[in-house]
Image (cartoon, rainbow, N blue to C red):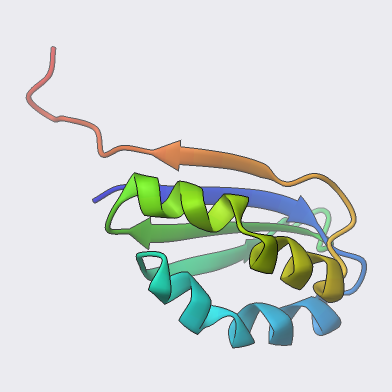
Length: 94
């Protein structure tokens, strides 16, 4: 299954998390089938999210969307996110 990995910093995790949680239906509309949130143990303002997605093209649409940009702004994202679109490794490849 492909994945979307996003890393960014937030001004206030307590303000960011509810906006993130409320945004779950929009992520699902763009193919997210679930994911995990991590905080940097040495810098709790740095958040990393790993989402399972059903299609990388839909994930790219999600990342480019105005709705995501607006949600990140209202949630207090304070830097430009690092975004990675990840394919599963083929265990049979040599």
